Each structure stands twice: as C-alpha cells, then as structure tokens.
Image (cartoon, rainbow, N blue to C red; front, side, top):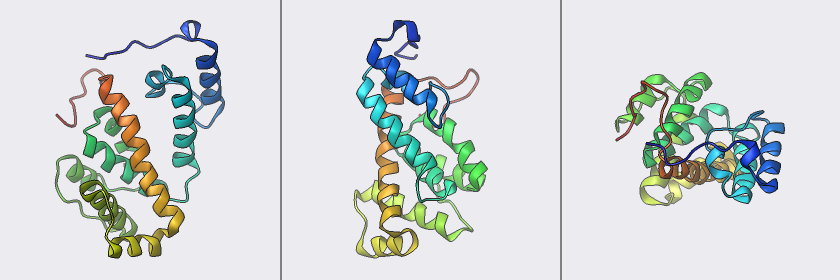
Length: 182
C-alpha cells in the first residue's frame, strides 16, 4: 500500500512549485513518477531531476547501455516501479528482452553486443564488490573512456536513490501488474 498521496500544485509551497515548473519545462515535459515523492524535499528533487535529465538525455553512453545499467540497479535494490518504467525502455533501445528476463530472475544474461556484455560485467562487479578490479577498470576505460565510466557509476548511484524513494514510499505498480521482485 503506497505511503504517500500525490500533491496538487495548489498544495505546494513556492519552492516546490518552482521545482515543478523547472521539471515540466525540461526534457521530461511533465511532473510525476518519483518526483511526486521527492518534491517533499524540493532542493533534493531539483538536483536529482537535473542529474537524471542529464543521465537520460545528455550522457555519452548509448541509451541501451544506460537503460541496462538502470535495470541492473533496479534488480539489485528490487525496485519494482523502476524496473516497470525502464525495462521497456531498455528493450526499445536494443537490450534483448531475454537478457532482461534473465537479469530479473537472477540468471546470467547473454548479449550479442559486446558493449552491453561489458556494461553487465562492470555494473554487476560494482554492485557485488563495491569496486572494479584493475582489469575491469581498464576494459571499461578502453570501451567508454573516463567520462563513460563516471557516468555508469553515477547511473547506479542516481537510480539507487530513485529506487530507494520508490521503495520507501511503496509506490504501487499499475493495477493488475504483478511485482517483478519480492
């Protein structure tokens, strides 16, 4: 059962309204999703919204790689709503549905694309060990450069923050949709 109710703009204070206006005028074009939760702390919401907008639409990484990293993060923290929102985007961007099914169920995915296999390797290692080995770091730098490695790590951190908010407030999936994770 959700632990929040959506706030109307009429209920918001001036700081909250300013953040909503900024989000609506940005690339998202609308206010909702996790920002409905985060708006309770308007400056947190503002900064996370800006960071998220960059990570989704300004990053040096191809959308398939970003969305794969997001899905790996959602699986790690068992964020059902985050998975629900991003798994279709990952498929649309070119991540094989079978690979996502394997990730969701805790299996080992197979990738034809070498860059996707590398993102899976790097993000899984980072999540599991909280580090990258020298070999993995070198492989990541060779493939994505320093900027890409920073962006991959930041995607994990950002979507962990978003997923935590969704989990804390127990954001429900659409009616009839079974949870992806227990």
